[in-house]
Amino acid sequence: MGKDNVAFHAVSFPCTILGSEEPWKTVDTLKSLNWLTWYGGKFSTSENRGIFMDQALEILPADYWRWHLMANAPESDDASFTLEHFASVVNKDLADVLGNFVNRITRFCNARFGLAVPSAGAYGVAENDLIAELDKRINAYTGYLEEMEFRKAFVELRAIWVAGNEYLQIAAPWVAIKTDEGKAAASVRCALNLMVLFAVLSRPVIPFTADKMFAIFGLDPEDASRWPTSAAEALSLFKGGESFTLPDLLFSKIEDEQVEEWRQKFGAE
Image (tube, rainbow, N blue to C red; front, side):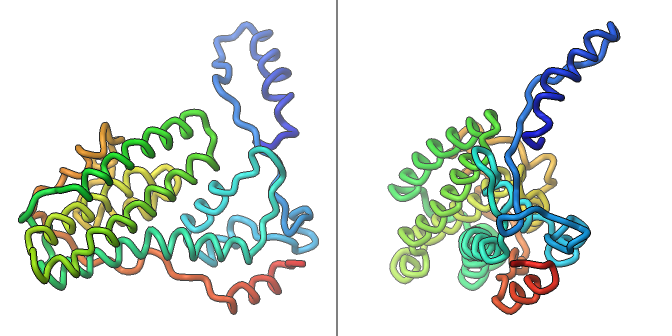
């Protein structure tokens, strides 16, 4: 809730509830945020300053907004929303990191192994190093979520996505397949398992995208979204032979022309 409501909901309202002597449930945890401003000023419907929920959802899917707002939540200080920063975050985080990973590995697998998880080969040093990093980051991410430190949490989540892209660069199945098809197959299998892990970890903040990622493998989101007990377990979900479908791009990049159009429409200064 906004910082101006903290005293009321933390003190005054609980006192009223207790004073009623009725069995009402009092709040367990209260998370407050500072102000989100529009280019440093107030959002105003009367002055046509700012994008509001109905307008936002007409422009882009909810997950674009959810990611930016939560990854840049005004937790310690007021935060200024600008369309330029919004576009930069969406393009760099969602399109270039998460979306690019999904696009690269599904299309490479289809080109060289078909639309099924390859079963050949065994995990090696690169996969073990990845597992060690993921365990550390998942533990940190989980802790931040439990403490409701959202900005720190989603820094970790982005780092997990980045770790997947870095793993692909190290494993380089497009190179390995020329001399060692089993090694290439193992790295592709690992990366496809990573996609499901990414979906699980991302579901708290971009649930619609996570469900699309589950759907690539025909997984039921409610069954598949159980929080991982370890990275090793998560990366052994698919053993080989599981089919998948080629996805559309998860995220479209926001172009400069769109930003300028929205600036004019929504009163950006």
